Image: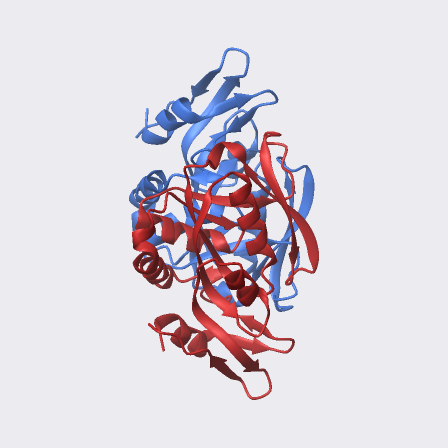
Length: 195
Length: 195
């Protein structure tokens, strides 16, 4: 069991409806030391891929992506939800449905910050149905950039997002893959992975 | 002139309507080295205040707040906009009007993560009319915690937010205070501050 799986067992809270709350350390209150460790681990796994930029989506992916970008020494870029009056017209867009919030968002990245020379590492806190990830992949490829890898903190392995994105040929590394969880018995089963 | 003022002059873009775009390094694409420097500088300025937690608001404050929290070795906490189905009912709320997006948001922080023992450093990328900051102050004080300090990357000194919050007795440190800017002549005037 790795450090993140251990932390989920210790501080994660399982709720009805396959909700895993990790808000005490990962996506509301952030444990800086844990995020540093996540950054180092993704750097170890993707070190040889000549990553030029780390891409995520607001909001809860930002701190993790920053910790990862810091280890690579490259800029971090985050896709924004909805249109801001401060963004130029010249941007890549994708439509993303949120499982958590049950709504649809347009996500946008300024064209200035992605080019065909970029080798992108996409990072996010959760992977469930994969909608956010598909949006980020679509934006990266619209820029002619390469999705060099995808790093996820927690994947819900019982939803189809991870499988469908791996089937498309992308390299997805999830630090913890939850194969099942049960709110009644407070148990959680992680997929066993090669370290 | 400090490192952030220099960077604004180099890479900031002044637009009509008193809009200062810093999206190439601060709030869309993030320059990791710059954020590290911001973290260190706020740590230097607030080092003796026994900070227990860094609080910000999603989305563009998160990476800066993370860099600051890392220097203090304390958790980072971000207020969320709008209600998520993953958040418990037990939370502090405040209403915040956004200058950039021209809308109102409910912002929320789970009660679990703020207590009367906390000494909070509030961090954000911009201070203009101060609405976001007032929301964060109100949430902190609703928890009985103390606002030990407020660290802002860029303050629009020609708007009233900074003055009104300082008048209330809070210690606000802004790394760059823009006293005026002119889109036509591409000039920007910073308030001179003691280093």
